[in-house]
Length: 405
Image (cartoon, rainbow, N blue to C red):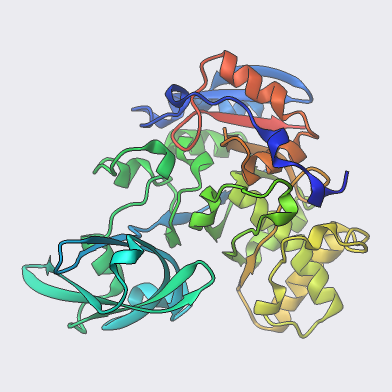
C-alpha cells in the first residue's frame, strides 16, 4: 500500500489512563527498558542500556532545551488568556530571539481566544525587585497560529529572562495536571543546552550522568544535534488516511563535525528519540538538494513532508549525499547547518542512517507510532502488547525501549 493511504485507525491500541506515567521515577535511569532485537522482546533496567550497544558505534542526542512557553495574562474583565509560544517570528532565529530587548514577536496558540477579540494584554511582573510591564498585542492569523507582539519597558531585560520569570513549562496535555516546580528539572534532559522546544525530547529523560559515563566507557561515540520540538508533536492525526495530516515544521541545527562524524561511522547512528531520527534522516534529503542545486540556501534545504516518497530520491548513496552536504557547508564557510524539516516517517519509508533507536512508548494513532512501525518493519504491536502486559509506563514520563530491527 502506498504510504499516503495508510489508515491511522490501523495504529490504534488500548491505553488506559492509569498506564500513562503522570510523574517520572525518582531515579531517571531506574525506569524499565524494553529491548526489541530482530523480533525478540526482553526487558531490563535503563541503566544497563550501554550493555546492548555495539562498541565503536555513534550515538546521537537532541540537546534542545524546553522553554517556559506558556504565558498567562488576565484581562480587565477577569478573563484569563493563555498565550503559548510556538515559534519565533521576529527575529526568527532562536538564539537572537532570547537575547531581544524591548520587543519581539512569536507565532502563538491562544487559549480563550474568543475573549481576546482586540486590545492589548498587560501584565506586570517583579524582575530583580523592580516591576516590569509586559504587553501582548495580537496581529494577523498565520495558519492556525496567531502573530503576537510582545513589548516591555526595559532595555536591560532580555526575553529569556522574562520567560524564566513569568513563563510556565508546557508539560504534555495528556498528563492532565498542572505544571509543578519539579517539572522544571525532570522535564529536561540532563544534557539539554539550546533553548527552543515546547516539548521535551522524552527518550532522553532516562539518561543520567552515570549512564552517559558508561556509554563512554563502552567505547561509544556521542554526538549532539538540535531539533526544537513544536507543539505539533502532540497534534492528533484527524484524517482517516495519513495523506490528510500536515506535519509541523521543526527547526534543526547540525554542526559540521556531526556530519563529518557520521561519515566516519559509515553513515550509521543510534538515535536517541524520534526527534534525533527526524533530524538525521532529513540530512540525507538535504544532501540530495545540494547535489541538485549547489547554490541552494539554508532555507531551500527544508525537507518537505512527502519528499522521501517521491520517485527518484532513493537512488543516491547515503555517503554521497552526506559528503555533498559537508562540501556545501565548507563552500559557504558554515560551521553549523540551520534548516528545517517536515519529514513524515511512516511504513514504506526506507531508513538511511538510523540503525538503532532509543524511544519511549507513544500515543495511539500518532505520527510517532508510525515512525516506530516503519523502523521495526510493521512489528510495533508485538512491542506494545508486551509493554502493556508487563506493566510498562507509557508516554513522556514513562519507560523506554531500545529497538534493533
